Structure formats: C-alpha cells, structure tokens
Image 1 (cartoon, rainbow over the protein chains, first blue to last red):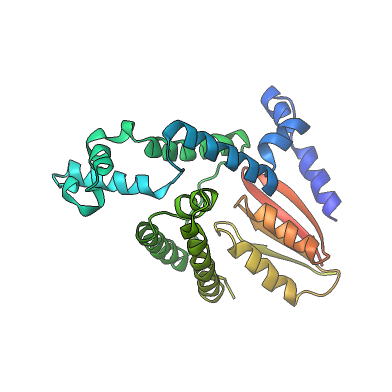
Image 2: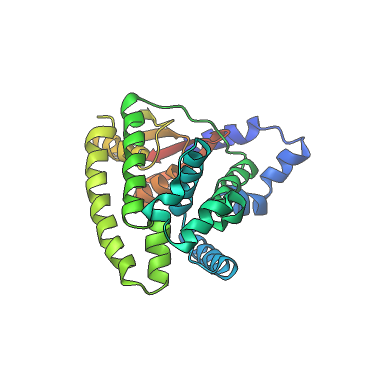
Length: 198
Length: 73
C-alpha cells in the first residue's frame, strides 16, 4: 500500500525541466533535501562556533543582539538606552553608538535567518504556514515573551549561555542546563495538556 | 486493516509527534495511519519514533514542504 502511493507520486512528477532533474539527483537530495544527521549538525555547529570566536573575539550568542535591536529602535523613537545600566560598560556604550553594521552578533543573526531561507528554498520546501488555532497563537506569544525575558535574566539563551558557556568550560553553562531541563519538563507538560488536540 | 489519517499541517514540533502517538494508541495491529505534516522536524522525529516502536514507516513528499508519513502499526 505504501509502495503503491510512492510509485504514484513518482510517476506524477514530470522530469523534463533541468532544475527538476537536478532536484531528483541522489547527491542533491542527500545534501540539500534530507535532514542532516545530529552528528553532522553538531560538527558543523562546533566549526562555526570556533570561526565566530576567531573572527569576533567573543563567544557566539543570539539573543544579546535582539536586546541591541530593541535599544536601537527605542533610540530611533527618541529614547536614551545609553543611560541604561545594561549598557553602562564601555563595550555597551560602543555597541549603542556603533549601530547595527558594527555589531557582529546582529549580522550573524541576520545570517541565520537568510541562511535558513536559502536552505529551505534549495530544498524546495518553503511554505508559509498559517496559525492553526487560537491556543497555538497565545502559546507562541507567551512562549516568546518568557524566552526573551529569561534569556536576558540568564545573560544568554541556549546558544550564548549553554553552548558557548559549556564550551568555554564555564560552570554557569551547566547551571543553565539544569534549569533549561526543568523548564523543558514544565513546558512539555503544558504542551501535552493544552496544545495537543485530544 | 483499517486506514486512518490525521492532519497536522500548521502544527510545530513536537505537536505532530504527540498527536501521532495518541492516534496510534487507538489503532489495532496492522492498521495504517497517514499523518500529513508541513514541519521539517516532524519528518525526522515521527519516522524515528515509529521505527523505535517497531512500526513500518515511509515518508512521501506530497507537495512543496508537505509530507505524508505512512505508518503501519
């Protein structure tokens, strides 16, 4: 029965267009369409983490840049984020006055989004997904707010505080890991009771 | 040997996997479940979970970024 379905699907795809033919190539499929194994992903992450450290001179982080984006937006509306305790250090002052193009972390974040878009387009799997129901919408908004708040309180997210922290042999990375795990248990319980259709 | 299907389009991980788990619980041995998903991580974790639990599973791309995961319990 499954074989019949896949045979039908294969037959229905006409392979006349050269790009479509490239998409059917085994190597193309393996490299660009099928998910990488966890080990390949981990090795790539490690290499990119080291490269980022070598170029920027600081560990890879994602969410600190979002804080800067918020501060710049606030500044654009006439606010004075340079007076905040968060940006009180010399480095913080430099970030605020330097702007977007001087902030390696911001460029990296844009790179993550653009890279993901290119990857999904190459795999021809791009799709705009709608919101399935109200609960998903509320869950996503609340989840995003909690994650953003938590990442600032913890001085980093699972990249900056966990991945970079542990790879720099910092104890704080492991403390973050314990609480990340506890949070995931609570989140999983909320998800399976509230968000999964009965 | 009945056939069931669930539509998990628009659901993000791990909701499709949890829905699959719950639905498969209700099925008898030999029944087929077709799960439609549009989230890339679901085509990794659903087949993985299914194989781990001894079900036959095949993933078919039925459209741009849409897959049917066929699981035989």
